[in-house]
Image (cartoon, helix red, strand yellow):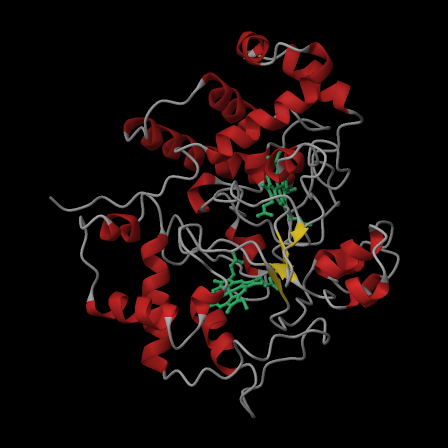
Length: 377
Ligand code: HEC
Ligand code: HEC
């Protein structure tokens, strides 16, 4: 299974790399170049074959690059056949401004992962802290230890680059993670080259529909309350009341998930509970997931390529998720019950009163957020 997916991906990936080279976003620093090698290295898993990019593909905005998986459970298989995680891969791009997870006086902000558990408290940088996880996660790249990863890097074709960037042998693993974070923040991954960016600079014109979508996004539809420019997220947490995705393979993975189909994704609240916070703190965050970036939400290799949206990939199109925001609480709309009933946001969504044309205008605006736009001369 896994092997087939990787081979199917390879040509698309190489095309993309060639294209990226041609339209170089400026040169990468040595550390960013090392990060790039690490992100695409298929040898850094056990068994070999799975790079970070297997779940964070550039051709789809550094999220899940397999349309068939996206169309179903939306959760990706790790290096070991049959082992799946429990959530949809969020974008690895545009996450670099997320601060260390903290309470800002009114709400939790920052950290990495849907539930914030890579807080950033250890390294002072959630993005780098996150990058230490997947190599060792048995449901992802499954290496036995940090030393195993280091040894593979030391035996790799980019060994020299590694030794130039990472000079302190006592901090090799930290340096690997910081280098990946540097690449994720680089102008090659977090490009800011969408039509929206050129429009901001006066180098592109929105269609009437895109313009209307932008106004709704910032106004009546309230999207900008949480999806704040320039990253189109404010790194805060909310429970939108997304239904469960019954196709999530985690429900049947009884070894890793003894709760089986009773398992519920408790998001930030679940993490805070496991981190030892008192009940009144974690209960208020039960079921909340981190607001993802909306940059590249529509970036896909072909029009009919399916992408999945939300933490469990329940939604299969932008039209569908926008319709959900608009009609979740409209009687007769027919949406299934939320995965987590507690703390569902009732004030900013659920019955926005948008007509069909307005929903489509918002989608048209979201499509302007894909990188790689060529402004017309
Ligand atoms: C098997 C698939 C898989 C692999 C391999 C993988 N990831 Fe992920 N990644 C995920 C999933 C799923 C999540 C969300 C997990 C969660 O929230 O609990 C995630 C989350 C992230 C995030 C958090 C983004 C955010 O906004 O919170 C970043 C960054 C990231 N991955 C980068 C990486 C890097 C770097 C590697 C390689 C070292 C990697 N991933 C390997 C599936 C994968
Ligand atoms: C109150 C904050 C808030 C508002 C308002 C809001 N969102 Fe979101 N958005 C979120 C959160 C949180 C998630 C993740 C929820 C989850 O996965 O359970 C999300 C997820 C999404 C996703 C899925 C992205 C992905 O990569 O999976 C899209 C698309 C989206 N929102 C678009 C919109 C649009 C369009 C609007 C306005 C109609 C909007 N959002 C309003 C917080 C918000």
